[in-house]
Image (tube, rainbow over all chains, first blue to last red):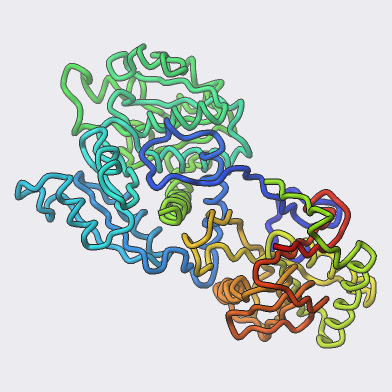
Length: 330
Length: 186
């Protein structure tokens, strides 16, 4: 085997990796608004494209000219560091020009509407707008009104498609495939756009999904999506192949939904004791930022089964893929 | 996506399986004549058919010189300068090159050279991995109409074509049919 080849990939008898296209679809969307409307083939195409872009990060020159000359605007009406930084790095690695606009710095605080802000950005020849907004449906609203590509970077409690894609990517990368896996999503599901995007992607890719948490945050109504709902963490852990922990979103909590941190930790925190129930190869995931000692014990977050930092690295590759696909169509 | 099978009436067969095999053998000989240190040689194919051709050239060189030759894959889609100008977005795949490239000779392998833009993108892609001592280009068919100052070092056949004609290279591994090269009329 020549030096530098990846070792654990399938090879044919001559020792070369198969190079046949697995992908049978072409990307035709200018926007990425959510995962609910994507087909299995489209999701697979993004994940396969992300494979190629992940490898760019290992090169001597970590930059490719794919989006040279395109302008990307990070329009973050709701504060975010991780997602914004990830999109910014992704855009830079694709050689796009990028401008960051945060809520406090935008004219929205001066009373301008979202539509007018976007039209001004478009008049400045923006090609791609990455939008984070506290209202569900804001990206959809924009996408239908402007010609630029709109990428949803999280809208209210609706969807966070790139997070859903990077979680699926990470599971596929670590487990080989997603079909047949049992994925437990734990925590604050009701307010979580991450949970929704994960549910849509995972079900389409053939996983079994169980939502776990207190009944106020994980209502039975979620079963309509095709998932199982449980309020008993210890019953779910032994069969899980993946545990995806969601952050308790203090900023969105109201008192009646969430009695107290102590009680939450006692019933639903992933503690060292509870982790003993997990399969030895179970993946522990968390979209971040982590509340150490709340959703998860510090030791587990840094432990062998944790893929939390892989999620960050993969997020960059997945966002490069999404920008490349949507930006290339437009 | 399955490509349309050439219609015998409007297509001319340029190579059959036998000629294609002999042509590759000749190119393999030329590569070994030009490059004495086969240990520092990398045959890097451009997807999809260049990858298979690079493998076959490596096999030929191994037969001729009894030494193994390193192979690789250069994916050019993220280095293209015509993104959004072509019908559909090229599917991106990961490049695989044995690293480091310093001190190596990379022979880029493709089935057909036309405008030269794929080759330019491949040069950029290689540069992003490092700085090989030398880069050469081997193609099965040179059909002319270059838009850039790029010239292959090893050519299977120079084939004069009209701009609108298409050259189709069929390989049993990638197309699941007998090896052949066809020239399709407009």
